[in-house]
Amino acid sequence: MIWRNTFWLFVALCDLSVVLMAADYGIDIWTGGSPITPQLYGEAIYEIPAVAWAVFQGGGAFLGMVGAVIVAASSPDDAATRWGAAICALGNLSLTAMFVVFAQLSREADAGILMHSLTKFPGSLIFGGITVIALRLLIWGDEDVESVDR
Image (cartoon, rainbow, N blue to C red; front, side, top):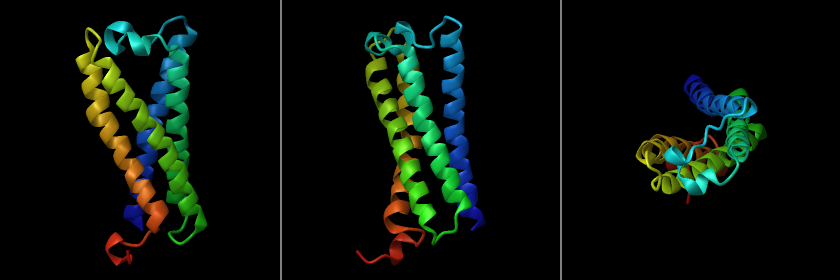
């Protein structure tokens, strides 16, 4: 039980870091700047307003964080566990999709290899993995996968 709660609180912390990053982007936008530049992200991403990216990123991460906290706070056999897993999966799936889009489109930018590598490997893999684990919890519950009849 301690491992389970610790894991989901770590997931919430990962999502919180993305919420804070989106908030930092929002502050930059509010003060007249833009965290999205064509040199780093590419023209295709730059054409979409930076506020749209910040809201999408912050919203998805916030959903993931709330879902992970719900899972950590609920007992394994509680219906809230599955609701939390569904919310967490939805939020982290949106982050994974955003990072995959960033990885593909930033490759065209002058300095895009940095953004391409960061979003393709740590970004997509971490939040994609969280999505898979949350979906596994949603579908099979807290039992071990080996003990479930298929």
